[in-house]
Image (cartoon, rainbow, N blue to C red; front, side, top):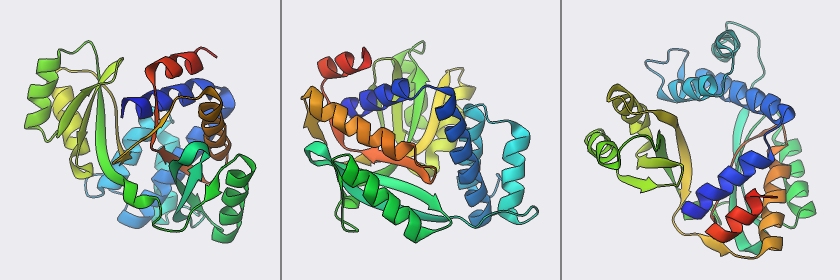
Length: 250
């Protein structure tokens, strides 16, 4: 999983622009709206909304913008009815992709995602061909300023299943339903929580050691990420530390 983490870091650096930030805001707002529509507008009784609310705030989305999205979701304000769809596909090198989409037109989104995959060396897979390789997990990232023993002691008592060294931070994994409580427990213990989220973690990874293949995968992911309907992209790519360092320096 360290390769997967480094890939995410590289992707973040490549996309750290104002335009990307604006797209991120739009995607997070859409996620908040859908969470409120499906589970209600109370963060105390809707854990999905609570997670999306915190994710949006962590990304510095203004509070009033989030609150308007909640109201659109509950029907207090007029909004668009978005449908969640997950597409499965392959990137160059046989790397598996899960692509989460929120759309108001399933046919349009499906056609556009298929086209993006095809134009960038990937392909759309049949439903179920890729999903079995992933499992939904909660993750909490904690600053390396925290002592590993303290992170483990607090984390394991609060539902963490594993604690890993991800270079710049500790990463704890847990059941998705435990992520909010785990992050809260770590914060209350005085440990700096960098991020908490629900994600899809691969059960096995595809090693990629070739620069050209790695850049092709990253190019495809960036193209998909630029699509307004795409919310999250999960991959089972495993990039070696030496190649990750080389890509990060580009």
